[in-house]
Structures are given as C-alpha cells and as structure tokens.
Image (cartoon, rainbow, N blue to C red; front, top):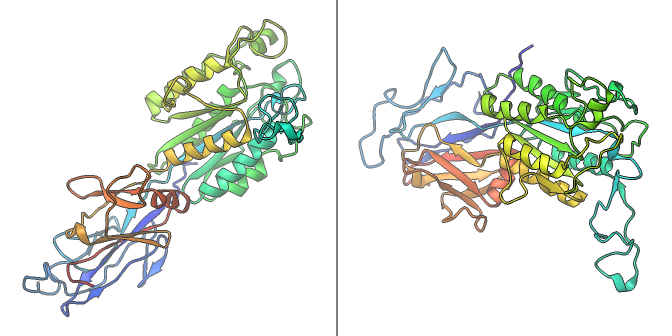
Length: 431
C-alpha cells in the first residue's frame, strides 16, 4: 500500500497594515490552530478578510481587491506579495525519510571481537585510564558494540524524530541462526519498522535490547539484502520528500544471494552491495551514508572463519561511501568510529547534514527588511547575521531575490531537532 506521510510545516504569519495603521499579527505555530485556520497539509486555508494598504505611503486599496485568495481545487492559500494584507500561508518544510540499516551480526557481541572501549578511556588497551596513568585507575569495563549501537539509536531517534520520518531494518533478522549456512543470512522482506513520523520508540521496541547477547545477536552480514529491504520500503513512500539510508556495520558484507555454496556464502565479499548502493544513488537519488564500527585497516586471512577472505573491510567501506554519494572529506570516506562517543558523533553529524536549514519563502516578502524569524519559541527578529559559519546565531537571506533564508548556529540546530519555525512578514511602521 502506498502511503503519503505528513510533512512538517513552517507557519508564516503575514502581518497586515490595516486602515488604522496598526499591525495585525496572524502568526501560527506549525501544525496548530490559529484564528480558526488549521495549518495542516492538504487542509483548505480560509483567509481572513481585511482591508489592506499596498504601501503605507499610498492610498488604501479598496476592500476586496487585494489580499489572499483560496484555490478551491488545491486548497492552497495564495498571497499577492505586492500587498501587505493579512493571511496565514503554509510553507512546506523538508521532512526527510530515513532508513536505518543496522548490523545485527554475531560479531557485534562475541567475546573475541564484539566488545570495545566504548568511552575511549583506554586507547592502548592496558586496562588503565589513559587520562591519568600514574594513578593506575582502572579503565571502565568494555561493553558490546551492540549495546553501544542501541544507545546511539536511542539518542538519535529521540533527538531527531520530530524532524525526520524514520524506519529501521536489521541485517540479519532476528530469525538468523549461528550456523555456517544460509540460516545465518535471513533479512525480512518488510522492515522491522516502516517509515513514519515520531518513530523513535517503535524502533527501540523492534530491535534487540541493549543487553542482548549471542542468544539473539547472531548470524552473518547480509548488508546487501538489508539495503534492498530499505529501498523497497522507501519505494512505497509517495510524499515527495528526500530519502536517505544510513548503513551501520562492523565488518565486510557476505551472505551473497547468488552464492553457490557455504564457502562462497561466507568467505567471499558480496560485491553486489556496491552495485545496489550505487544504483540507488545514481538512478533513484537515494544516497547512503556509511558508518563503520571498529573497522581495522587490514586484510583478512584465508580461513573458514565466516569472514570474507583476503578482504580489507576498511577499504571496502571507503569505496562504498564514495559509491553511496555521501563520502566524507579526506582520505577516510566512511564514518570510521572506534568507540561509542565517535559513533554518536557520526550519527549526529549525518542527521544534521540530512536536515536542511535552508527554507524557501513563498510568497516572497515585499518588505524583506521587516521579516522576523523565531525558532521553537526563540525570537531572532529581523536582524540578519553576517555569516553562517557557526560563529553567529540567527538567519540570513541566501539569494538576491530574498526568496530563501538559511538558519545559522543555534537557530539551525534548534530547528533540526524541533522542526518548528515561525516567520512574520511585517510592514514598515507596523510596530
């Protein structure tokens, strides 16, 4: 079944200069009821009837000749930018659809590989805290990579679920066995969690708990099937919003669907992963962010150990990040994380890249110097910042036509987490 998801909205209050010269504030919050006008997608917006002046220095335009109108076919309110009348206009905000493709293979919890220095206090692995080695203070105990991944997913979904529609796929699925055959490689045809708004708790409920061990966290690394399942889910979404995949893994892909035997299934790298990810980016405009967990830059030996032979997982993920269309700058193209702190930072960085702080203004304001912007209740007013390099908090126009703004500093980060932005179109001398 095709599903159309609700997108966030920027509520823009067009503040009119009435005949008495006083302003009329019709600002509405996102997805709220103001003045009897429900600002929801697909809802007919009925304009308020006002008498407006096209310019404070000119004569008043007769009532009914200017101001907002409603298209009865589309339900969209339009506004004459040459007028300073009163209306509420819904401006769609980009609400991306993001599939988390999460590695649930046995290596995430095994005693020999699955535990790591999650807080980065023992880089040399001597059991002593690096910060104060002379005191011989014991480093914190290592935890499983899966426990760290669960914690980071908890944080990311809780932080950004207001701004992104989220879903999740596990590879392999919970049905995977700890066996040297195809039973270690299943992936559900439908995702563990379908794309939806406010989906953080649903994702946490669907994936194994933080303290699960090899009784549940087991199987191979069928990353290709995981990405395919994510793409199949994204194909059902018809809301016109941008789509992304975040692939998180701790090793090289195996479990090829066309493997002739168990040796090919586990001891050969699955090159189909690059083809699937590349096709998604090139032909479907769906980029894939690649996140590695404790990946070593070394070539694996030839052995019946369930890991692709003669394969450098570090190099493969580097290639995959390039193919996926969202490589990092520098020599390391994927998000290389060696502890939980780095893993959380990587997912935060990716989320903020996905969530745009650039907002199109339609209609274009007649008086751009009198536009006022607030984000999640914090007023930044009508004074623009001079730079958007992170040193200033606020907003600025991005085009000479003044039809687009960008949020900067805390204004951007607050918007990314809340999805709530209000703008007011004011008039000269409106007060």
